Image 1 (cartoon, each protein chain N blue to C red):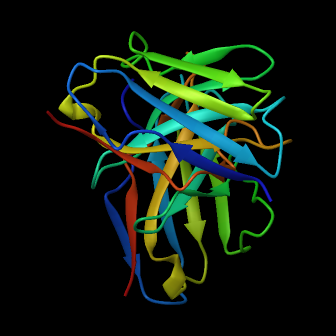
Image 2 (image 1 turned 90 degrees about the horizontal axis):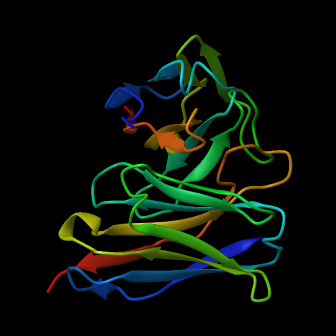
Image 3 (image 1 turned 90 degrees about the vertical axis):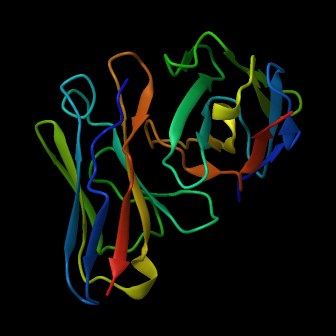
Length: 110
Length: 119
């Protein structure tokens, strides 16, 4: 199974909104509403930010939102803050009953 | 607060079998999906496999022939065995558990354990 496609990097100044895309196929992203997004700071474990396309776990700030259209899911950070600088990974359930991750996107706050 | 902790050898020789354990505290493993995920240095996350304590498991097709995930509910632990290790298996290995109402996601994660394959 090939990794989901994410841009290698996205950047923006504090306060701006950015969007990270995650493109898969009809056998994963497009076929199921089980897309998740994780934030990972250097040397740390990933942290779940969005599950089931658009749901935020308790404690995740409201500036993080998720959506999906066809085979592409998106994570939007509205009002970028310095602490949002991290790597972000999408994941999806697949038709093979497995999970698959994206290659990761490095978010830089300018 | 649910906490996970990986344990096992930090160094494995080529061709040997890696055995890692994930100990869970502050919550049960029964009735949840349990995951193993790895991350080579400077690279992205890779799904290794998951096990549902009430039955069923799935593995990354590229690793399926070498991977076994098992559970010991009496100890509130689950384990990963990866056979025929090579240099390409050098990575940080994470264990994770989902949560009620949160599908197909690792909600609680261990801190990760670095495993190096070298003779």
